[in-house]
Amino acid sequence: MEKMKLKLLYADLKSDIEIIETELEKALNSSSHLLNEASLHLLQAGGKRIRPVFVLLSAKFGDYQIERMKHIAVPLELIHMASLVHDDVIDDSNMRRGRRTVKAQWNNRVAMFTGDFIFARALEYVTIIDNPRAHQILARTMVEICNGEIIQIEDKFRMDQHIKDYFRRIKRKTALLIESSCELGAVVGGVDEQNIRRLKRYGYFVGMSFQIIDDILDFTATDKELGKPAGSDLLQGNITLPMLLLKDDATMQPYLEKVMAGTLTEEERLKMLQYVRRSDAIKQATAVSDKYLQKALKEVAALPNHPMKKKLRDVALFIGKRKF
Image 1 (cartoon, helix red, strand yellow):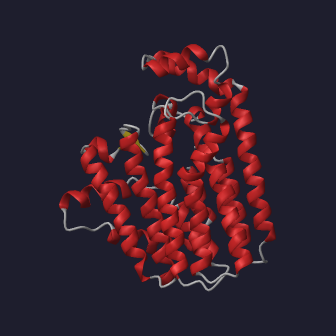
Image 2 (cartoon, one colour):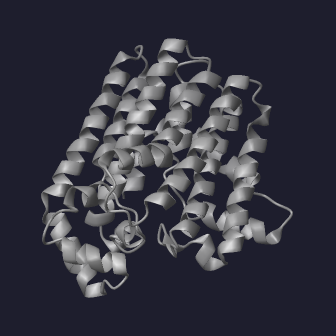
């Protein structure tokens, strides 16, 4: 339902999104039957395609040509997909979007090579763009995403981390790729410098809000809605904002100790989720997400008058208010 609502927001881009979907399938075509299967397994699991949408919406403020823009929109979605495959190996995740992950369907080695293949395809696909600045932004983005993956590994099960550590991590994990989607859409679309900067900042703020909401939903949504057990982030050692706000809570302490020891039972998981859902941590984390959202909306307000202003606003509000 939520995904359908999002698609309605950019229904006038439907034909262009269909072009992106077709190009994604082409980009994942390989001479290896195994790579084909593993890559398409992930693609067919679906996704909101938020990053390509931000590329296209940003490019609309300049010289919009879908045949050109697809060579930026597709690589950004491929980079996102590749990072998901690698994430699932790092987190030992068996389910994503209600389907078995590549590592669960095959194994870790196949998953790592599949992720590498998808990253490589992203680099190959963008070569048609003859703008060095676009290549520099994309390269910097990929480097920072990799740095973010290492930071996430280093921070696993580390309860003494500061909220600043969390923000640093989610910037690289999520916000940077959305920021780059907006920036690259604007750069390749020939948008003027002032509005490139506005769109870039908008992408960063939306990305931060998006990930915070994701981390809240990991506790508040149901297993069915998430397509995986609620609380999976914590069980995998990823300490997110709601947990950082609750880490000193006396009632939460016994649950956290069992999570750290790997001895939390299913019954205890459900009780823990009930407690987190009723806690002030959810309201506090939502308030932080809202602050980023308001900053994003300020950037939209500063953009020149254009039909896409409302789209950017609507998508940001959807992201900040979604239920799963």
